[in-house]
Length: 188
Image 1 (tube, rainbow, N blue to C red):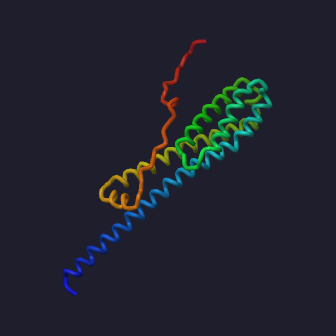
Image 2 (cartoon, one colour; image 1 turned 90 degrees about the horizontal axis):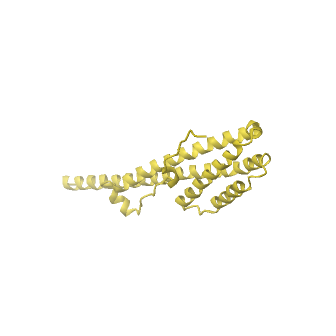
Image 3 (cartoon, rainbow, N blue to C red; image 1 turned 45 degrees about the vertical axis):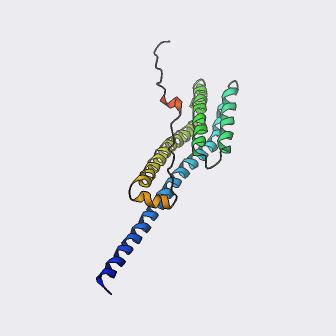
């Protein structure tokens, strides 16, 4: 076999190996993005499971806060009904639910006996831990999406991305209310 053929075979082998490694790297990144979303979904489900217990605990102390309970219950049901693939809508409803939960917590502040309840304290601690995990999972999702999007756009992996029909991943966006400057007042 001539040297020209050996060089051609080596070049073709290098190109094939590069293609396979790049394609597999993109698949691994896409899988990591999907796993990151799965972590968000797990935490949202966990929070939804905690809500009925929290509502029942608070209801026992506060009979006159019906609107807050109805809003939390409605949003919890809405969240469960969002299609699995609609990540941004799921996060929009989850953000609204977070706001409603803050209202519920504010209601609880008016009932010192409730705040002293060990059941309520336990539920609030679990809810706080879950909210922290949701925030972390959102960050992880956006980081993995950024890595995937960069790889899809960078040369030469963008060639493989186009051939393999890899598409950019949308980032999860913060709700508009999170961008508002909080109002602080020390007036009575």
